[in-house]
Image (cartoon, rainbow, N blue to C red):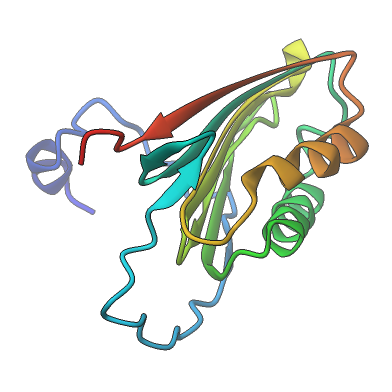
Length: 159
């Protein structure tokens, strides 16, 4: 990609490393959603677009293991009863950090890891019948954090 093209994308200061390998899962077709259902949920008596969990892992393990992170995100999707559309993960060198997203029919799960600090930041946002809270135990078992903080935001409360 040319420098001019990167500049137009707002990425003129980014240096692309072609030696890094990204992992992806092929996109999956999804059946059309029923037109009379907007997938808003009711949680704790509040009508909202969905539950957005902000998850911080501290003193966590295997945060540089890209195939393992992919497997863990897939397990989160399965446990939550969500529909995986696509996963895109990118490794960073030299520290081995990983950034990526699992795109779901119900929204997304994203991860950004700093293995040198034992820290990972995850966002888990799901609407409809999916249960994002079921991802918490999957993450706890997979990364064995010494400490885990979870905050929940109910998105779209006024929509």
